[in-house]
Image (cartoon, rainbow, N blue to C red; front, side):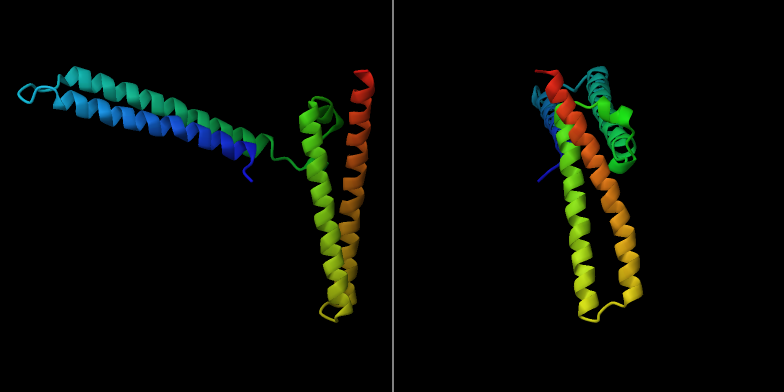
Length: 161
């Protein structure tokens, strides 16, 4: 399943490929016109400059999307401030809640595997205790954040009634 960001990049590459095909077709059609005539260098230069300008705009847009998605939106869910959460719409809140549930399930599964390895004598007790301690703290943080999100979603639901 592709993320929304990947879909944005893919949707931006489509216009680039269409422009390349149009540019090549235009150059071929201009050169195929009259075999004795030559293409006016100013027309060719203006076509190339227009093509490069459009490609440059698309590339800058893609770089901007990559920057915002990587540096601004990739913050850890647990580090989000309540103000950030209040600014989110319903879809973003449910997506955030879903991400927290997945994160919680992964940690619980990891703890289950660690305990299983300990019982099979593949892991010593000290390692199990360290893993358990670290991940129990993460689980508590996740559960607190999930409760905070649930409360906010319920408050939004009661405000709209």
